[in-house]
Length: 393
Length: 142
Ligand code: SF4
Ligand code: SF4
Image 1 (cartoon, chains in turn red, yellow):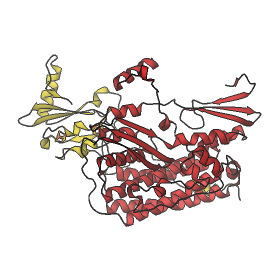
Image 2 (image 1 turned 30 degrees about the vertical axis):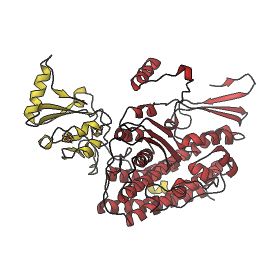
Image 3 (image 1 turned 60 degrees about the vertical axis):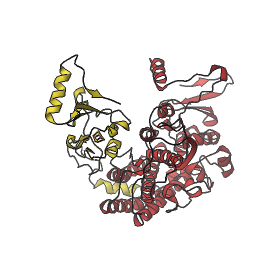
Image 4 (image 1 turned 90 degrees about the vertical axis):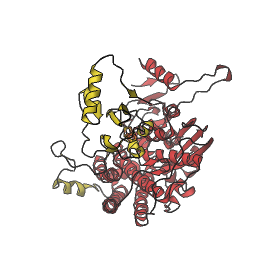
């Protein structure tokens, strides 16, 4: 599995199958003995043509297509998209809908962070933490299933609002679940701060200074762990975050341990925000009407996904289908931090370093084809599908 | 600083029931709002096809048996369906709902993935017609 390149460097290839995480990606680490001297990433193994697919579906159908960009942060994709389309159509969802969107988004953040806690602990060889954190994550999954009707793809959003409502019974159940999770999160925070073997694997590993984080364009908890005050929910509040502000959570150390602490503290803040939403849930309508044809125009919609800033570019030509949708997921921004921080670390730290940015491989694979004016060509969805079938035959 | 910060959890869980569910031996009821298989009530349907328009998976078709007397049969493909409930949202006459009981939909038979909903005589009429090869089916699609 090793290859020797012409410069006499020893390169260890990892992936594309199971490079630490259960998603495909290819990494090449140049090593001298145990120490990594260079790193490179190759992505694109799970390109699915979602952006092109979006051009062939109407505005409503696209909610469900785009929700499937990611299986962990599905709601936030639909939210970014619906907020963008609503902006184009010049409608604002009613306050109750915005609050419910925010509530589901925060529950999703809890589930994502607890999932990551387990994965990262597993990469560090701490399987007890992995098992217990995933057991507790079931609590929030059950809550999401109870209020939305599905464990993974919540399908809460519709254009102009949401399709689910909360009643007293559900609110009580959410509160009960949150109490349990809060207690457990405090416990996990204590574990990651005190367990000596675990600290040995996380403290001063993969340290990234604030300047580095800013230069590399890191986003989300990865950036915040290096002290970059960057959180769209605070900087540019959307949906219900005007009403229910969140706290900006940062740390200064910038190492793996700081990323654990930031994410766990974010969970604690999620519990606080959700309780606040439940306390002051606005009444009224769940949705407003949005026309089938969206007025011509383009817009950028930005939201804070569990992994960082998620950007949608949406362009309409006035029809019932979008003309172009571009998705930029947060994982893509964070890859640079892995390759530059890896240098100087032991090869054995690489899985944890990779897991440390909470990467999502499938959701960041996009294809760009640059056409020169003389060889421009337009492919329909059907052409592209046929091409794919031929290609893999 | 200590070693084995989670030792307490491990010891305590020795005396607890397993956290996992004993499915399929014990089946816990699904939450009331679960989005399971689609259900269709033909008595209220007007044949407006709004449900079909926004289905992201082309999982439903409406077959008109008799337009004047509003006799329709809905053909539903549970394998294509992504269980998003957009059709339920679109129907203004509340004909559609998603079941919280029918969620064990995995099967090895293809036939189970084409479901006909409608009045019994209409479904029968349709199936008979389909069996009669070569006869054009009065099917409206998008
Ligand atoms: S639930 Fe969604 S995918 Fe299934 S039939 Fe209804 S609209 Fe189509
Ligand atoms: S939207 Fe409702 S009334 Fe209209 S065709 Fe569908 S089921 Fe029938």
